[in-house]
Image 1 (tube, rainbow over the protein chains, first blue to last red):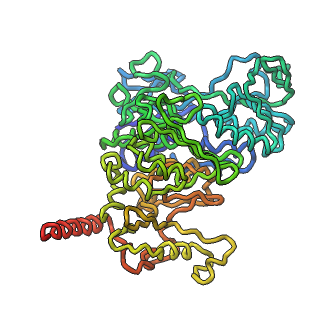
Image 2: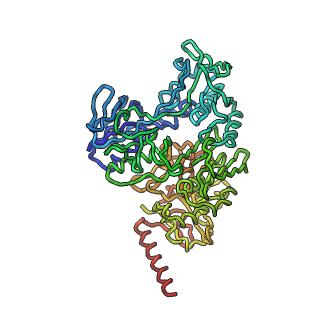
Image 3: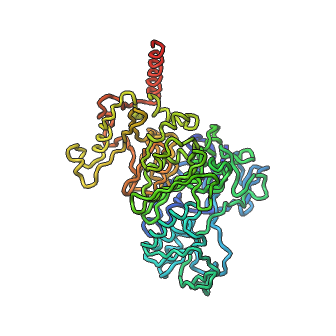
Length: 431
Length: 164
């Protein structure tokens, strides 16, 4: 069997590993436009801050391809999936035939249509190459402007701040992290970053990047000029859909997949940031670009190719991050713009000065939560959000902040169909 | 692989497992000295009360393990041979993705890195929690042995019901 994977990150390499473990003899080809060792994208801020070197941010061994007998076609651009011929066409016109294909080609940072983005010193922040580029460029930088107050923007800001740069973050929304949290939690981060010397400029949009070949300033739509030598753009990521455009592979914001990571075309699977899969809280297919989801999709796609009918776990948006030592975990419908009709929101401050909790309940079900500061025990809350069971009887415990596995155990016992993993059996067998 | 299983009907809630676990993960491994150490030893196991019964929870070494799939640093690993899920604390960056996805609340955010059951790597024989349990509520078994024991228990419970 000839198996082809497009993409060499979380989803692609997980799929390759699972395929090799399950089938010693199949031929596995990994195609990627990035000729790099298996590094973790999420760790590139450490390359900018200088805290880690490339060999420290690998999530698979450097000899991964040889050790798993994988044909690595790196630095090669796949341009189209030829579903009739069952082949992938490369930029040079060469065709790579497949018996089964996993599309795991990720996304590309969206570049705002901004005059002056072509200036030297303007970077996106998604790849190792970009992170290394920023690190190299930083010698001549005194002030950096970060465009975008999302997770990527803030991570870039903190890394540059650690290098001793003067950092200004320009955010179009009223608050940072507006897609993930509400004003209440965002303010905790704004204060926190402010204390570390970063300037957060909300409701501010760039109009033009000024410079004659090299960045000299960013001018806002209100005409304010902010002198800087470096601009980092963190304005979101678009799924790489070029491969499937004009083919019969179904897509919307990403390549549409079912719970087995199958597309609508036989033997074509998708996984990772390019895949749009069911969000069990939203009740529709959603582009959740998350590391845990990408790895799971890579595994499930591979297992299904190997003949096991495994499925994705129930899932929704979720994230965990530490920005400048302030931790946050969010899950479900938590964004400032999410506004769930008919929902009840409970916000709790304390006990620590930065601790904040918010629970979003609808029809007695927990549909989202945010923890800032103390994030312990978050996993049991995540399990409630993804399973969508009636949580009314434990609402008081949630609000009090005193919850652990024993809090959800009665709900697990009542809803065994929703908590079907064998590990729950192990815990409950003698009850 | 032998995992640590738990018989809630034998558990007295004495916290011996918790204490033994903390001592095992201290620098001295001596119960008289462990609590005086500069960084307090932390138990990987917790005794909790639920519905009038006691429960002691630690990592289930799930298969597939959500914490391993969630780890952005390649620190959390499931051993292909033994099935043990362990955290390479040199690689862990403390992002708490594993904390977010562990349904058993068995992965804790530590000061710097993740704290979880590591199956007592310094011990050749019985795990510390199992050895410390005075009522044998905690026991080691293979998945097969566990299924048999649980099945027998269910049958016995059924007979008790019938005799009533």
